[in-house]
Amino acid sequence: MADGTKGKKVLFICLGNICRSPIAEAVFQWVVKKQRGLVGWEVDSAAIGSWHVGKDPDQRAIQVMKRHSIPMNHQARQLKKSDFAEFDYIIGMDHDNISDIKADAPPKHNAVVELFGSYDPEKELIIRDPYYDDDDLGFVKCYEQCLRCSRGFLDSLSV
Ligand code: 4NP
Image 1 (cartoon, rainbow, N blue to C red):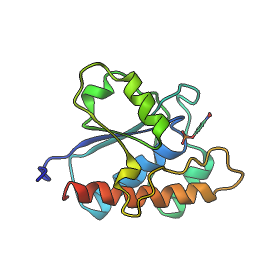
Image 2 (tube, rainbow, N blue to C red):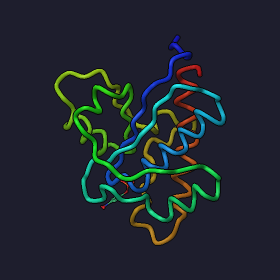
Image 3 (cartoon, rainbow, N blue to C red):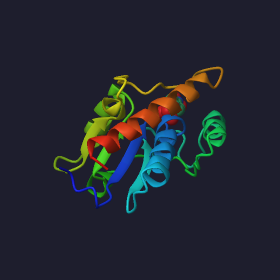
């Protein structure tokens, strides 16, 4: 069984780091601290691309988190080589993210690279990309998926 007494370091990745991965980071952090009462975990998120570096999350993501009273404080940053040494888990939202993460990875590293959706008890493998939507329904869906996957991930570690 995994050592549930020691916090893990988890990095969430999406294409732009303004929609899916900051939601994943915020929801996961909230479940870790507020629902499971775990300490010593480090949670962050980052982008594959550099287009939005330094920006706040999309306004629709901010509004969905506000409605659920989940704190979200993040400025977009890009995935870097040192992340592969720093984090235990590097978690992508879709298959393209996983391919891009693996393409960026140094030849030898210990980070586990996985799809967040692989932890969904409802087996929805791909986290909804809401960026091009005209409304916020995709952000609501993304939040719901991230909540299920956060719980599923922690359940898988028995913490
Ligand atoms: P995210 O959404 O990867 O969930 O942050 C996107 C953000 C920006 C772009 C695409 C997806 N973009 O093409 O700029």
